[in-house]
Length: 473
Image (cartoon, rainbow, N blue to C red; front, side, top):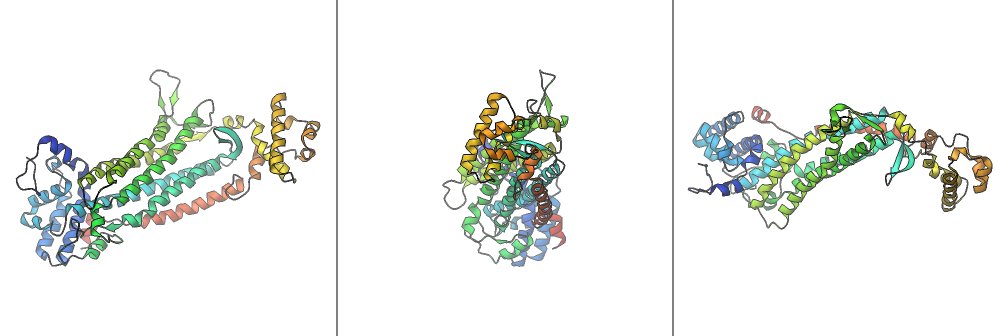
């Protein structure tokens, strides 16, 4: 028999219970429900709604409840019911006063925000760790010149460090998006009631301060029906997964023996069930495929929210299925992605073999003419003819004689002897944000500074534990 606090003698068909109960998901909020209950009890006492003895009994009971290991959550409708009934079993009548001046509507909004605030900190730590892994890999790869691609076709030579730092920029933006959501997330819903506020002397600013929120939410109707912070958080997960997916795809391509740019350590590849010679980049492939999961989660939240009238509607219960699964999955994704980064190494020799195609320097040839006063469109046309000529005669740029160069333009006779060095080609790209070594080293330095600054941002995110809260009462 299920316990009902909200409807006196109601008994639901089993299939309705399965459909409507949320306890399988929201039991994850049990810790935060207790934490919020302690802060709420303090506010009730400070407002004269309960006396000191009642407050002490309730808080002591909630503190003990957090360590209770034998709770059968399956018999409860939701986590809030579980907390109150289990507390009643521990302390008796005083537990029945805990729900004074509180609704499940503002209660669940509080629990979710507390939960997500802690997850935000965990996610930011891991994103920062991934940025550091990319920067470290870039730092030890400054001597590797890689064919850069557009349309997956060889385009221009770049430092592989420059390529890696592109992902650093993506992930720094991801970090920034997550961090910028913190002020909007860190508002306290408690004291909003079911939708209209409270008819009690309840200090919302006090309870907000106790739980280290920036401030209370400003409108009780918005508070109990708002899930913007979940939509925003899920979107941030999706965008971050897209960035990791792009790198996963590159690892899949680069680890193919036809490219052979990268080797993946055995712990991050798997064997074939049929072909013993194969090592498959399964981890990178699963990273690549993760985007669909987070897109699905975001779609679920968006469709759930679309068209909901104010205020609370039961549709909002679905959000917990999404946010718990998504946040757990995202933590795993971040950890395994960091591990993948730390378990790859570049095959310098194989990469160098892919630099034999001097057509990668066609743009450099055009730029050479432009720097000597030739309009770019004309220079582009001239170099295109040079490329066609080399292809027709099976020659590299560096194999053309002076007479052959003269046929295309007299200025080509001034080409330096080492012009077709890929390292020199990279060095020439010395504008801010370019692939020139000086610029890449400077970006690595800037990113090292960012790593220091981002650590302080992570530390600025508030958190509070039950132990700490009770100790400071």
